[in-house]
Length: 211
Image 1: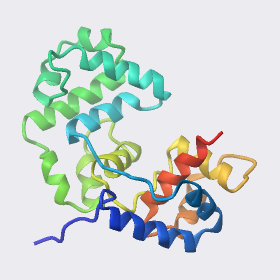
Image 2 (image 1 turned 90 degrees about the horizontal axis):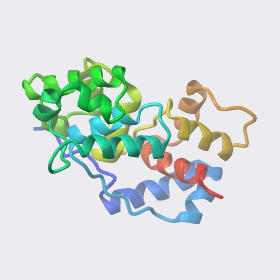
Image 3 (image 1 turned 45 degrees about the vertical axis):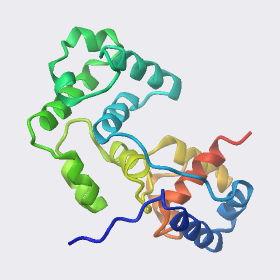
Image 4 (image 1 turned 120 degrees about the vertical axis):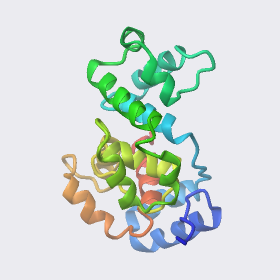
């Protein structure tokens, strides 16, 4: 039997990571002290979270939220379900602002889930690496999408989305860099944050958005 996965939603685990990170990175520690321990609760249905991540790819927050709202409005209860999305006519999804490319991604994901080729609930008991491997076969689901799922829906503690623009901008500001850091540079910095890179990521995002 696999041991229960650690979760960011565990306040004791979050505080443990908070205290650990403060000793590992002086610059990050200053940001963390301003905010204190964040009350974080992983949430969301796995399929809905993947759909929303696909719809959000390469879009600013307001634009992504607008399209997600329009897609949800297609369905009577606003719930995103695999069978329903798979059966939805292309014109309806296109009318909600879904690009042709993302439409292909949604149809591929919903087809696999509806036909039982992927058991999303089984992901909850898998390691991060197993989840990445399982979802890699789905069109349009790359590292960024999986990282968002791991952090915000599954609450995994040691995820660093090195290809996320917000993380890049946050790291640039945190370390007063002249240019956006490369993914390899962020990975290197993240070695100090292991095994609580998800918690560090949350504070880097907060720092990016500070006035």
